[in-house]
Every structure is written in C-alpha cells, then in structure tokens.
Image (cartoon, rainbow, N blue to C red; front, side):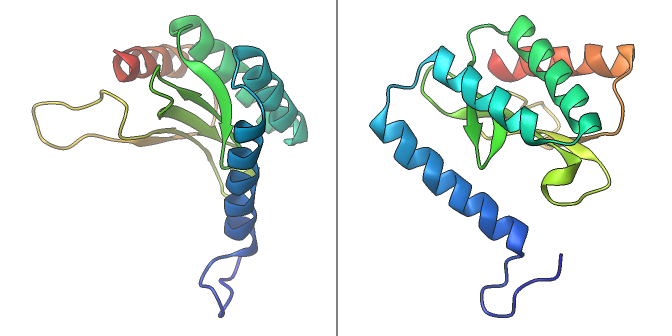
Length: 146
C-alpha cells in the first residue's frame, strides 16, 4: 500500500477515485432509483471476501430497516446511503477495500451527529457485529438521518 511518488495516492486510492468518477457518469446516464442503487450495492458486496460480505449484508439490512427513506447507492465503490438531497449520510467500507485491519462505518457532513461538546465521531472501526454493536449502528444511523 505504498504511495505512488507521482501522485501521492496508493493504487487502491486511485482505483476508488476512478470508481467514483464511473459512478458519477453512470448516475448521469440513468435515473437514480432505489432499485438501481440496491443492485449496485449488492454487486459491490458480491466483490468482497466472505467475511466482508457477511458484515456488509448485515449492516445494509440494519441501515435499510432503521431508516428506509435513505437511498442506497455506491459511493467511491462502497455501499452508501443518501438523504433526500442526494447527499451521502452513511457508508460502509470493507476492510479489504484498502487492505485495512478493520471495516469502517462512516458518516459524512450531511449526517446529524452534532452534539453539544463541539466534537463527535464521524467514523467507527467495526471488527465484528455483536448485538450491542448492531444496536449502536441503528442508533447512529437514526440520529444521522434525523
């Protein structure tokens, strides 16, 4: 995962940027519907290794059950969910995406996670799904989409 001296980005990072450019072109050519978004997410999950697939499927189910109004789509080649304005609220990044030791549940600035302290988390390492972790994911996604 060494950085390329020409661009400063790893091959995986460059691939993610190319994937996002492909997504933007594809979105311009076809109507963004729940069905096309779901198909894209399921295709991305199918590309993951077995442990990543299991986690991604379960997180997808948790998100879509918790806030069915979020629109599924891919974002930089990852499963993501957008608000009514089309802004990414939450995304899942499989550990294999950038050869990381953990998967990530991340939130973008459209997420309503602000709290009174003036500082809050925008991403969470997910190494395994337990009932407590699943409850926390549901709480975060509901708050983010509120």
